[in-house]
Image (tube, rainbow, N blue to C red):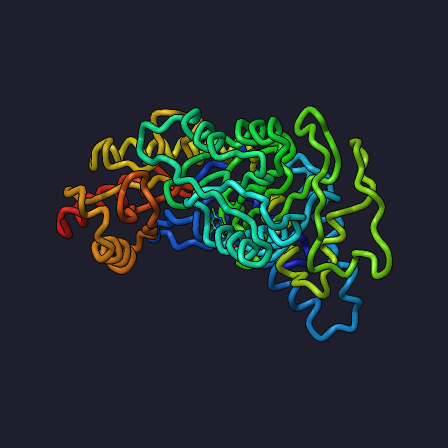
Length: 441
Ligand SMILES: Cc1ncc(COP(=O)(O)O)c(C=O)c1O
């Protein structure tokens, strides 16, 4: 290990030392040391909240102190001009299309309330969306008289991408204006066929709203290439930034190879940059923006400058390690975990699509109990997750969701793998889960 401390600087804490050869060549053990995670805790719940690297915590603390009690002008840095450009680059988009916001919920709410929708317009979405999406659409339904057509995606190990695309397509009517779905669903960890669904939307002239809460930090993704209009993301899950951070991609120019449709009318609600008199210029029809929509949304009063800087640092760390390398690692660990789960609980225990590689994500939902009907026994799931945490320091979560044709919701245990996990801890966690599930069954 080589210290980054200079002659007049104190030796940094262990988690901020750079391995020789840089992070791109660091071992996964060395990378685990970057994180403020106890060695004896097994964190398999990044889909809820990630773990911050020490450096990210340090930036958060340092910038908070720098700005506390100062008389500096807090508004220019709240635009995050440079951070947005750097983060945007990592995700294949420009600064005018990127916003640092407070979380995925805030991002998607600002999108849903900014769409130009009215009485009779229809939105097609799924019952497997996060509450943040469904409650906001229901609000605009009550307020503006929209119709929300909600489909329940199939679950189970043998679901195929085509089934999902067909399910959406069957719901589209001449009144449909919006297709809204999660890139990766939180209940069953289904990696939606994002590009195919966006192409479906393009064929029908629809606006696409993607809940991408789980994307950044997990996948080496190009947000523009998906072809969506809006993608709201969390900064504190797989990207491991501070809680209360998010990223919002807003399509602000037309790249026909990705999305040939004109830009949708969009009202950037919560803005101090939107003109105070008159209207903004018309939106562009080319690959050159006519104004900076990102600025309109970013400028919304004072901001948590420290959290923005800390999220930017987390993104830089990911770029240094290599987002391609991280994605491969996360997926490899997930497939390892999936095989161990199948060994202990059986293929049929899986709620997550598994045989179609296009739908696999590192979030894996399963029924750990022998009896099938225990999949609707919430008490057992609460006990299972609580005891894993309190007795074994293993963090997972349980989820509840609709299943086509079932009169009631099902519950599942859900684990997810991230770059700081290792094969040994997956072995230990799955073995412990199997023993505990037998005891509770
Ligand atoms: C798919 C999905 N969407 C949205 C959210 C909400 O994210 P945030 O806490 O960043 O608002 C979550 C949280 O778990 C999620 O998993």
